[in-house]
Image (tube, rainbow, N blue to C red; front, side, top):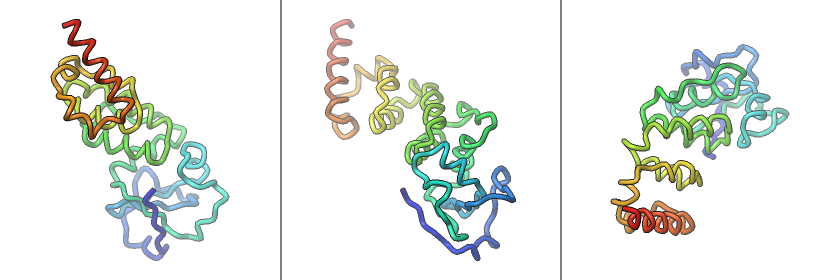
Length: 181
C-alpha cells in the first residue's frame, strides 16, 4: 500500500473533500492530487482490512495515498452508514480505478459493488474486465464475458493476463465453445 505520512502543517494549503470534512475526524488522508479527507479511524477499521486499528496513533500526521480525490471520494462513501454511491453511473475507466482501490484497501462492500457494476461493461470493454477479473480472481466475471470474445481472442494474447489456473480454464472453455459452435 502506498502510504506516506506528512506534516499537519500542510493541512492549511490543501483542499478538503466536501463529503468528508468531519470536525471530529481523527485521521486525515491526502489524495495524490492534494485533496484531504477528514475521516474516522473506527470506520476505516470496521470496513477495511488495510488500515491500522483505530487505537493506532497518527500523531497529527497526514496519510498520503496514491489515488486521486475522485477515486477516494467514491471509495470512502462505502465506509460510512449511508446509501452507497451508484457505481453504474461511472464510465469504465473511473470504475476500474475505484475497483482497484477497493481491492487494494480491502473495502469489501466497495469490492462487491464494483464487481456488480463492471458487468455493464462486459460487452464494450471485455479485455479491461478480463484483466481486472483475472488479477483479482473473479471467475464469475470471466464466465460472463461475451462468447465472441471467448472464441475470437487468441490464446497467445492471454498468456500475460491470465494466471495458469485461469488460463487452463479459459482454454478448456474455449475449446468446448468451439465444439458447440
